[in-house]
Length: 278
Image (cartoon, rainbow, N blue to C red; front, side):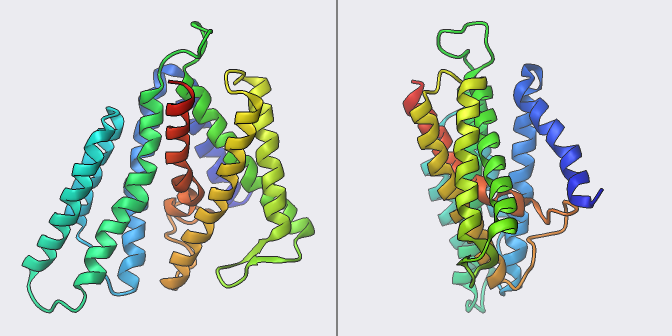
């Protein structure tokens, strides 16, 4: 068994248990927060490869504040936290003193890292803690957050798997050869089909409260954003001349390599649920 499968065989059961087993709700929060923190560190590693000097103290302080705000679903605090981040990052870089030739690059990497990884990814915590009520009409059922997160990962993993195997079997036309030569339009179509199939499975299997049209529409949006997120992270690595963001997960690269499609979709899931279930 290769290292990729071994890593998945260890990580997936833990992730699934943290989603579907109510007493382990906080375990999911810990996993999500740890992934954000490590993913942010990996982003800054890429930034350093192009000459930036991100301020990790300011960045991690803002990240901690954002994660607390998401955990308690106090999203009105996000704007002042981001404002404080920008001011603090600029002031800290100025106080370092000359030379200032890398100031724009360094401050930009500090702020962008927090916005890209922590602000987007932190919405996973808000989904987990903000929709903890039973599904509508089913007081004895698992919480809405359990259904949402199960749907989320089922669709994204289905999309990745469908795209991978369809691309390998039928891929002929490159999707974005200048960014990720291995991706094809045929693989993208296979990923879209798989994501829609998984959405339908989720609706009929455990999530009837989410109508089939809504499930299919959400899955289609998630699939497109997942591809865009994947390509975006690939472009960041290409710009930094790195094959992977890191080598923390055997066979999978770094955490950022696993979060790429999730980051763009986490806010979509949260705000969709906020509109649909409230």
